[in-house]
Amino acid sequence: MFAYWIGGVAVFCQTLGNLFLFQGLRKNRVYLLVGVLFLAAHFFCWCNAMRMASLSRLVPLAALGYPFSTLTAKLILKERISRKRWLGVALVTLGIWLSIRT
Image (cartoon, rainbow, N blue to C red; front, top):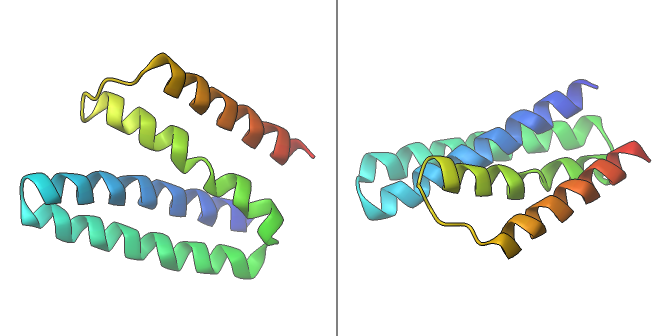
């Protein structure tokens, strides 16, 4: 169970890392460094989670990065997300839910 919490933190760090990396490449180099630090935290959390749980259980958790990144792009970066992309995010989320339940 603890491995899933660490995996969740890894996904959170990945989402923030991608956000800061994107901002750092466009605006401020400090954001770039913060993004790299979040992605490094993602890597170490993910490695620790894989030591504690099977890969087949953790991979669906990693797929949560897609909906979280899309939500982040919409809410923070104010990007326009098409209906097709939202449908894709919904299907990914449904697939994650089905994978976790089995």
